[in-house]
Each structure stands twice: as structure tokens, then as C-alpha cells.
Length: 635
Image (cartoon, rainbow, N blue to C red; front, side, top):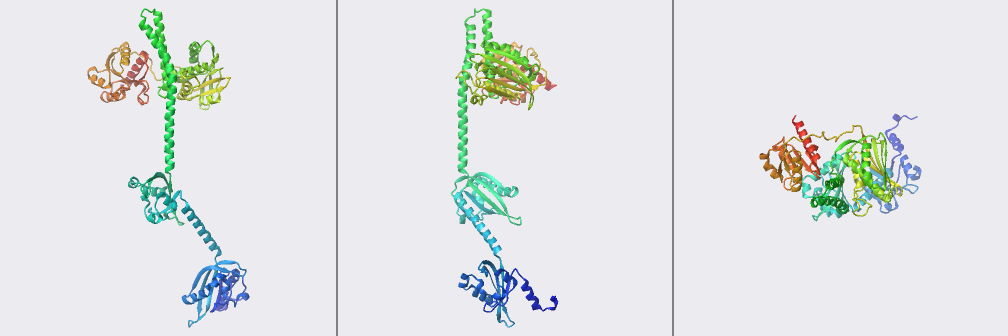
């Protein structure tokens, strides 16, 4: 084995060159003929040393390069400039091509005479293919971006200066590339947005959150506005340094106009549906109210025209007026509940007791052709509901059941205590043996104003009231119907563990203090007279005011113990009057009365509001509750 230390420097160099296989390293004489050959040259050019030494190096060049004298030019440049370096296609022994990185250096003696050339070649085909693939990919991407005309796609530097521009940007914004590249992107914003700093905020948001996305008005070159959907993303280089932003803008003007038109259409449709609903409501309610008014006006007419009527007959007409007024109140309550304006007065009731009492009254109302059956579970229990609404819901279900059996049939009122997903409930059901509902009717049964009855025969509020009542009570309503077999309407109400008692929001009835001085404020003369009579009947001293302003002017002289005022009046309303009185006379009780304005009196304690219509009993309770509340607050 030869020791490298025993061989000469030249020999060691020759060993080094011969051992290199990744580079073709060989020498040419001054005319370009090959004089040496290494293992690397043999590996990727394919020639053995004895095949190639003495041949001209131009055989490695393509025909076109030889025709253009590239081999000779390479030697001349190397001799003149001290080096020739280039990349290009070269040819192997088998005729295949490879992409070569070539360096040719001149070799001179001590006197500077040209002896030949040193040539180093490396096969960089793989790198060339990668670079070409990357170039082609980038070229395709540039063509893609440039070809997109529905989106403005361009780049900004870190300060928001535009650095490139595609055809979509030109189409949407109106600027050519030579007009806009180098300008700040804020010129596309409205004056208001620029003044508020929106362009800078957009870049800061994109940098901080990784994306900025908005829709807003933008300005074209000609000054016209368009509705833009804008997306800005930050761009980072391979070292993670922030170098700029990618910005994509789409003209969404047509989309916005279409959405606005759709919104207008929906609003018009909603208004049309409201008008249709009002039309349907008017027919049904007018029919019902006219029937009630016929009874009331007819009875009143008899009482006025016939003072000679017997006491029994007078009592009959007076009872008819009272009962019909109660039915009118119930009808009004249906409307208020539908509009969510009906105040709730919860109280604990025994379901079976109320159904039993209801059956005793309803038997006559349903008619002789209808059999009313009770099926009450002994331990059904109590529920906490507004009693009036509960009875109205059962009544509506029973009347619908009766109307579904024109030839007669059986209505069953039942109660059951059940375990439900939300807890224990009491199921109150009204089942009939009538016509049943087809699926298309069943699907719409709870819709307000929807009715299959003839015009004027019903309002379409019955089942919707049942649905609304159940929801208000914290439960739900269900309908089970088979066409030709019958229908069952059920209320599922949360069971209450409380004992049966009076209205849970009220104190026990108490008497109005004698000679209570009341300032009555009511703009309607008839209602004012009626309320005055009720107050005097309760033992009150009454002072009348036709407006809030009138009441304020009388206040110093009257010095009332309580002010009783309507809410809705011309000029100053009852709420504003109450507010002024509270500021000027914080201890003065003010009782407001209204028929519908739950939104107006929202936030006031229940004790400060009396809902119309009312009678002596309701007015007495309202006054005593308010006074009790005031006393408790002062204690």
C-alpha cells in the first residue's frame, strides 16, 4: 500500500482529480482536444478515457451550438478574459442530453504562453428541471392572476404601496398598471373612510389577526362608487419576515342591490301579509263584536224605552248586558294575547276543580247535540297560570271541538299528570269525535288568523290563543288529529307544588280608606264619568281633570291622596304625568290605567297599573294594593 506522504504533490493532485465523480474535470490542449479524463467525466458523459482522449471537446455540444461555433467562442473568451462560464445543453455518448454548468480556465506557463485549458463540467439537470418547473409554475400563476377579471388581485408593500396589478383590478377600478403601481391603495377609499383612518386600520388588522375582511363602498378612477368585498392577507418571506400584503377585491354591487331588492320585497310581502291578516281579522272580529253589541244595545234599548218592565225582566236584560260585556272582554283578551299585550296574572289553580266548574257552565253553551264527558285523573294536581287565559284556552278548544261536529258528537275533557323532558306536567286535553283535520290544515292550525270556517264565522285566533297561552305559562300545546276520526287538543303545563290560593300577585281584598281624595285624570268624558261613579261608590272624594296639564294645575289646590290617570291622552300622557309627579311629589301614589299599552308601562310595578276594562272590584283591589305598596316602601 502506497503512503500518500511518499508521493509527489503532482501525483497527489492527479489522484484527487481522478477520484472525483460528481464533476467532469479534464484538460484540453490549446486547440480544444482532450488530453486528460477523470472518473466523473466518464460517469455522466459516458466515454472511457481511451475513447475520448485526443478527440475535440466540441463533440459534447449540440449540433446547433457547434453550428454557431460555441466551442470555439468558449475557448477564445476563456483565453481573453481568464474564464468562460455558462450553462447549456450538452450531449452524452448515447446521444441523450443533460444540462451542464461549465467552467473553462486557460492554463499558461511561467512566461504566459497558452498551454491549454482546464474544463470543469457538472450535471445540473435535476436543478434545471426544478427551476424550470418553478418558473413554469410561476408563469402559470402569473397568467392565472392576470387572466382573472372578476377579482382585483394585487400586492402591497408593507406601507400599502401597490406593487403589481392584474387585469381584474384594471377592469373593476379603472386604472391601468402604469397609472397605479407605486401609488398608495388608500386612493380607492371614500373621503370619509380615509379621514377616519380605515386604510391603515385595515393593514393593522390584517397584520394582527392574519386577515382583514370587510364589505364597504370603494371609489373607481372615474369617481363612481361600487360596493366591494375586500380581503387583505399579510405576506411573509421564507425567513418569516413581513414583506407586504396580498389584496383581493370583488365588485359586489349587483349582489348588494339584489339583497336590497330582496329586503324590499320581503318588507312589502310582510306588509301585504299584515294587511291580509287585518282584513281577515276585521271580518271575524266585526262579526263577533256586532253580535255582542246587538245584545248589549238591544238590552239597553229595552231598559230605556220600557221603564214599566217588571223587575225580573229588567234583571234579565241587565244580566245579559253584564254577561255579554264579559264575553267582549274575553274577545279583547284574545287579541291582546295574540299581540302579546295581555298582562299575566298568575295564580295557583286545581286543574280538576277548574275543569269540573267549567263543565258545569259549558254544558249549556255547547248545545244539546254535544255530549260533554269528564275524564279527570284524581291526582292531576295544580298549575300556576293566568286563570282567565286558562279558561279561555279550554273554552276555545271546546268551541272548536263543537264546530268540528256539526251533526253532534262527544267532547271529552281530561287531565293527566305526566313526566316530561322538562319535568312533571299536567296534560289538559279536549278531544272530540268530529271530522278531524287533513295534514295541510294540521300543519297551520296554530297560525294566527288561519281558519277553515266561513268568513265572519270565526277569527282564526282560537288555537293560536291556546298556543300563546301555553307558551306564556311555560308549557306547550299539541294537536293530534286523524281525518274522519277526531281531534285532541292538549295543554301541557308545568305542575306546581304550591297550594291553591288567590292571585299570587295580589294581597287579600281590603277596603279603600274612607274619604280618600282622588284626582281622576281621563280625557274621555264617558269613561271619566264611569270611573267617577265607581270611585264615589267606593267612598272616595273625587276631583276631575280632563288632561294631564289640567291635573297639574289643580294639584296645589286639591292636594290629593292618590292620582288615577289614563295612560294615552292628547298632549301629555299618563306616563309623563306620573314621572313629573314622582319628581315633584315622590310620596304621592299614582295609579295608571290602560287597555293595551304594556310596552308603554313596562318597568312599572304591577301595583301601579290597572288594566281596562275594569269594574268596582278590580278598581278597589288596584287602589288598596298601590296604597299597601306605598306604605311598605315608607316603612
